[in-house]
Amino acid sequence: MSLSDRKKRILRAIVETYIATAEPVGSKAVSQLAGLDVSTATIRNEMADLTDLGYLEQPHTSAGRIPSAAGYRLYVNELMDRQQLTLQETQRINDALNLKMEELDRVIDRAGKVLSQISDYPVFTLASAKEQVTVKRFDLLMVEENAFIAVVMTDNSVVKNKLIHMPGELSDPQLQMLSAVLNSSFVGLSQGEMAEALDKMETHTAPGAFELIALVVEFAMEVLADQSRQKMRTAGITHLLEHPEYHSLDKAKPLMNYLSEERDASRLPVALDSGQNVNILIGPENVNDALKDTSVVMASYDIGDNMRGVIGVVGPTRMDYAKVTARLSYFADSLTRMFGKELPPPGEPEED
Image 1 (cartoon, rainbow, N blue to C red):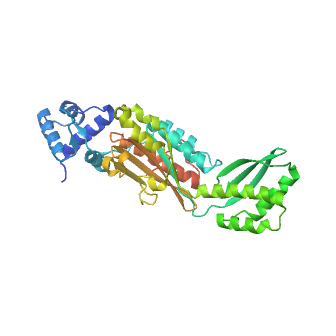
Image 2: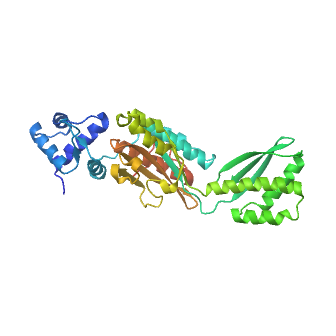
Image 3: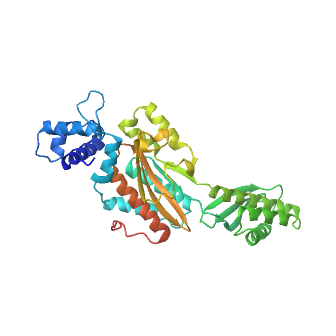
């Protein structure tokens, strides 16, 4: 059913007032905010109609109304204005994302933390796994006579290191020789190919040297295996407690537990290839029980090399959708630009 312009203006006023106050909205407040030249009695009748249509709810015996999931959905789809970010917000986002020389994981983690601070909601981030990740370079750094650090850099710019202890002493020239063998024999290979190369090397390599090579290669294979998994990271979970809906720990705990668990991409609210740049799930539109009383706003971004990512905000259905969508969209667009080309000058949001 198509709503009249008056009903839409009333619904919009109620949604935006409830977002700001977390309190049921009465006809007097609507009369002041909706800009309608009608009596409060007429507004009450319209509010009753919107309740019957499922767009509003009346909590307990309160005379005021709050939006339902359907009301938020209509607001997001038809009534919400697109907001522009402030100069300070774009400056802060660009500063946080201008980290091209850092490894991908740290860029994504930092992006999530900054967005959570700006939005006051928990944020989750995910970078999709590359179809096949390989090692780009090995570095071995001597720490002491019987220990060295193995550094593995992958071709998707992830850098991992591990301290390796040896049963005997090893000179720096010997360590450099091992590094040369690793870089000549195990770079650019898949996990399976690395295992095959290691098996072939065992028969014609001195036992002591092979043991050290095997330790580094096994670590590299662990790094590749980890990169093949898509994991969701979260930031700012405790921001939930700042909102009235989650002042009760009984209400907040299930959602906080859900967000704090490390999970793979199969548990994400939406798939990476949904085909939409921004996706909003309101209340029961979320299939997971832990999210059924929340809203999730997600945006996708391009990493390059056929890789994509998702960054999303989780909060009460009362969240400020216009503000969250504006910030999230700019964040996702900035991540895409960062991985593909230079960011725009601070304070100049991307034009439509």
